[in-house]
Image (tube, rainbow, N blue to C red):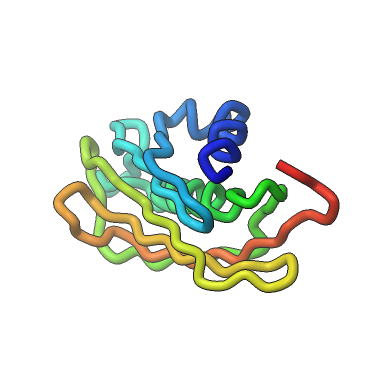
Length: 134
């Protein structure tokens, strides 16, 4: 079911497709997304713009909380940037469900560079839309 939900969602996810984000793994309440930092994602300090790191984490979060055939959106999210990423770095975001209750959920996402160094920690709160199936 999780894979089917992810395939359907990715087919309409133009921003992930445009940025080359791949969903490499999904299971109930979990997702892994991968992206390579390009030259156009770099800020004036020569490091990956935090918005792109956030976007990758948010994408993994979105796919993790949409594995139950119910349309679910972000209610809130925050991020802590731990280390910089640079052009050419391959980043992986692993999202894990921490709790689901009623129509809400809490998800943690760790973004790592391919050498294993943690780049960011993200926490998202989800909200299922009433009556909407995915």
